[in-house]
Length: 476
Image 1 (cartoon, rainbow, N blue to C red):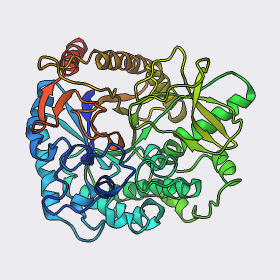
Image 2 (image 1 turned 180 degrees about the vertical axis):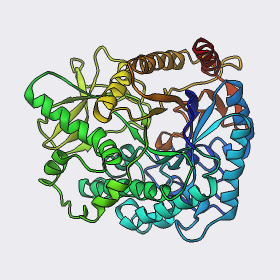
Image 3 (image 1 turned 120 degrees about the vertical axis):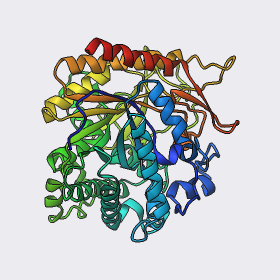
């Protein structure tokens, strides 16, 4: 069974962000259930207990997707819904739910694009060290094997892990996601075990016949430099390694970038990288790349200071105390590079994401240059903004402009030979945006969280519907 030959136009969600039903039908606790209920670092003071209530309303959601000409849905499976204790004991109600979910989307002509892990780690595993514990990687392989066995006859497009970089950086670098740790050494452990988990899952996948193809989803930040000096070029290479290559090289080539390991070894203990794991990484390479593109990384050489990564989870942009300031530091990796956010002549969201459509084109061209004709999907691309209905309508023209400009760059790369096979808007409908809460809305469909999660299609929903129709008509 091969992947679809038609171009996939869809949208995406993740289990904890949209399902709700956090304690229904035998589901176990995820680390996000515990964090959102108990942590003082849950600064927006909301939970995913109900979220978008997709668990109870998926039929309505798939009808809306089909009505807007979408032919694929990217979603994730809740690991603790299938394994309430992380491993061993299976919850049959959870297994049955995803059969119903997949059957429903297929009945509407929507191709499943299934992500196995989108950050809702079972709390039972988090208590034992989470991704810092190598046993989590082997538990993930067990969970993946169950999914392949159950849903392999229905699903053609599989993803092991969503955004290994962003998730591990948020957990162990910024420390704004559970377990809320800031430590380079802990980050390296978690990042390594996450990539090992992906490889182990791929090896399990290869034991099955005719269940499609499997990839990984990377949040890719194309690296731009502040000048053309040799020092900046070196900083750019290191930034490319940190942002992109340690995920994409490892998933596609089966090995970490050698020059990255040389630099990391100067500062950290890399003893967890065992010789016997090399064969696992080599055997566990993926068939395709899913790319989540949001913004670029603008980089300059390291100057001074400790490593840090900033995060804006309030949507209140930090105003500069110096009106002449051209940039703000977004991230420092001590000894390697500094990443900056340009403040002049740039288009920033309220959450400090730079809107940079050209980076979509550069990303796709770069990937072709690095990895050849590897199939690629843009698995997330979207704009988070505050929104309220006016006269019962949501005129999200900013989102339409964002989508149109990014899709234009995608199609430019496709015309130049990049093997890109699909585009997924983040997100299908408004959902829980992790620590950002519910004010940061990404959806094509507005969800009224104060009125039983009532759905209202936004202007962008209809724009996307018409765009897809026109694209398909011109193609035929």
